Amino acid sequence: MAIAIITGASSGMGREFVRQIADDNELDEIWVLARRVDRLAELQQEVEKKLVIKGVDFNKRSDMTKFADELKADNPKVKLLVNCAGLGYIGEFDKLSVNDNIEMIDVNCTALTFMTHAVLPYIVDGGRIINLASSAAYLPQPKFAVYAATKSYVLSLSRALNRELRFRKIKVTAVCPGPVKTEFFDLAEKKFKGASYKEKFMVPADKVVKSALKASKKGKAVVTYSFSMKSFRFICKVLPKKWLINLVK
Image 1 (cartoon, rainbow, N blue to C red):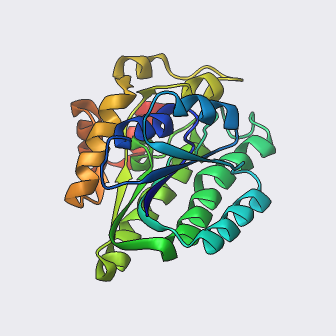
Image 2: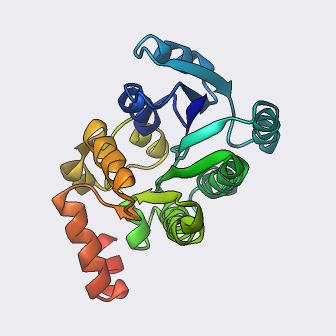
């Protein structure tokens, strides 16, 4: 039985990934992981593919360890792993609580690393991993410092794994969009308002996911959606970081 595993599937990009891969005839089931299991149950009404609901809080190591034990018991054949679970809080480093800053690291870095390591033994040769990074990975972001740093980690890890896993023909793709129209900013701006100019670069989640899936099948290591973000990536390569950081601030 061939399956896909999607973390953070209850909302945003994760939910959209479920919708778009539900028509894949090569998949028998989609395992959807999130803290809000009620949202996952609602998602089953939107797709015909069987969803296996797993309640996992990615802030809790015990939840992830339990899921790893379930993997050992089921020994599934995983064709696709999509790490979408993530969060970000806008605000200056010292204005955010230490718990806010650590929570971003725990979910964006630690949980992604744990899940990838746990699922990797069950990914079939020729399978794929998609990690949701961000265009914030290309440049340190004042007032979004920890979030941007965590996404730089995701990008770096994904590139390295894409090379390491070549012998198994497993393709690892880092998805680096700019602002996406999801619930993300509702939580990100719970204490401080983000830069207003980012609203001009908002893109639909369905288009980002479609682009990500296409790039993953082609084996691309990194995919950046939209002309503006591709331009941003290029600028970050050629101009001094000091200039750009001052401009972003």
